[in-house]
Length: 106
Image (tube, rainbow, N blue to C red; front, side, top):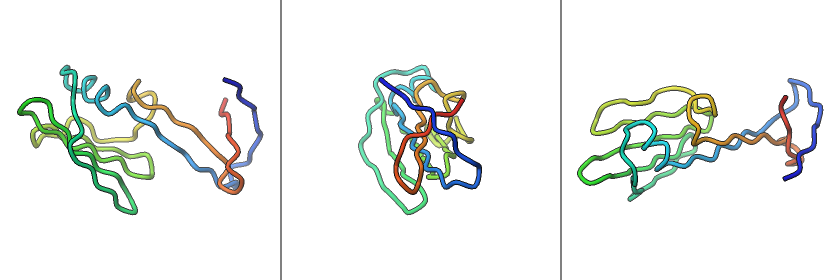
């Protein structure tokens, strides 16, 4: 994989894309493997995923601003910013909003 360093100023519009291994993240949070997505919904501000592991139920909500919540069996197990520091199952990529060119942050 090749990356190109591009200098950008803080007033340049940037798009952040987050990719998350949902099953892996729930395993990290609960200690239980093999979670399955059985429903999903999308709003202009977030995506929500209903997941299950046997009788256990989870709802994962990923907001477009990088915030996330995870409830398992009605109890909050995560409420905060989703970054590679808060989950090894998250991968963040940044792009120039105007032309889609990747941005590498140092």
